[in-house]
Image (cartoon, rainbow over all chains, first blue to last red; front, top):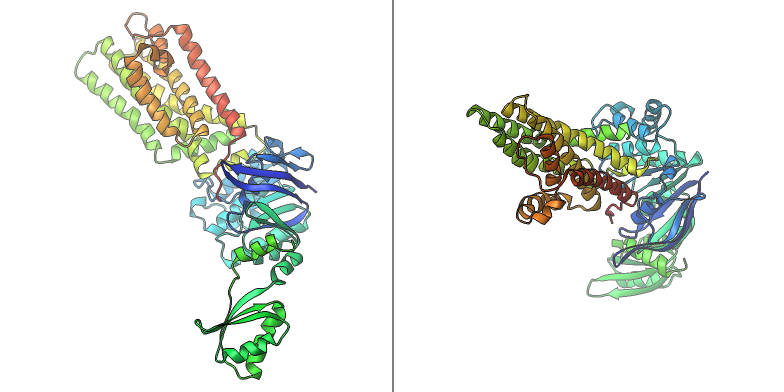
Length: 307
Length: 238
């Protein structure tokens, strides 16, 4: 059981502050590090992995500092975001090299076991350069797992994977989290994170924006005013029916666009209500689309909101 | 030394397309030496001049540059060095291992061809082949250490290294005698000078200074590379 503690860590590159006074504690189980691109997730993970010095503050693994301390790699496995590996090696040779670099007593067995864990045994004798993106990701994972680390740090592990590979990797991460490992992975996709992580840390613009159980984060993101664009065969009647219900906070008739702009306060009731009105009043629905569902707007709400 | 890192480094270095250059350079040198020999009897002076300007002056610095940056530069550029850094291995061990692999390559592709070229030109009886074998090996090792360190410090190692080898060693050191004190080539020439008592390999620095300087540059550059590897920050992806 290992714990990573980040204490008031900041990292700047010249004038750019990538990580701004972040404190968090990552314990056993799966934690998702969620945030839009450029939020500082990679920088934070690199600091946790000992690849980058905090400009201020510190990162510790249990009672040891991580920076300039090669010993921590006996207990940490890192899956970098970057694609590069030793492409001229086969998957098996790469895993074996990693096991030998860890100075394991039986590197061959360790490499074999790690490849089995990520289900790469069938392709282990192919050169890495010929692997698909998903296979590369899994071999990176095997390299990080050879020494059976207590802590696993993964930077955007689902990037570029197809849905089936994604599901497999999610299952693998869940299983390893259930074994009591401390696992942190970053992603900019909420759905991805909440399918795997019990606990979510949110980063926005270098700051630690929110922290909690995935249900809390989900609630923060859904229990808020949503803007929708609604286009119907009779916008005025639809508008009248919508404003008559408590689930909306405002309805604007945009006569230029010939559409309604609706602020929904109660998301669940709103999505139930619209089709009901359409059916009861015989109004035809042409379009119902979220007007501000970009992740950035969700995050900016989180930062300014009750988090 | 770490055998796994050495194997990865050697495969990475020799597996790339640039490794063809590692073979091409000494091949050209051997062909020219053969060509000179075919024209008739070659004086020791001419042979020494050829080894001095071509082997020590051109081939070895270029090899040192290709090998010294090649043993670590590409891994830093593409980020695969993370698989070495993220291991419970002291970073200086990584630097020393890479240096040893590089020095081995320079011995194989630089010093050995220099000895063979010497044999072709003067025959095995002369001191010249061995003298330049020692000189090119010492210079090659120093270049490898120097350019390995540069590759750890900056992404522009190849350019800076080329400028040093061409502009400093060839141009400036050729014109300004004082600059020769800070020239790997001149230090190595002092070794060759000492090992060939009867002919005029002209060195501008004394033997003691040369030996100390070569050893010092090699050791310090490798040590500093190891030190810098401890705090190597890879460019972020964000």
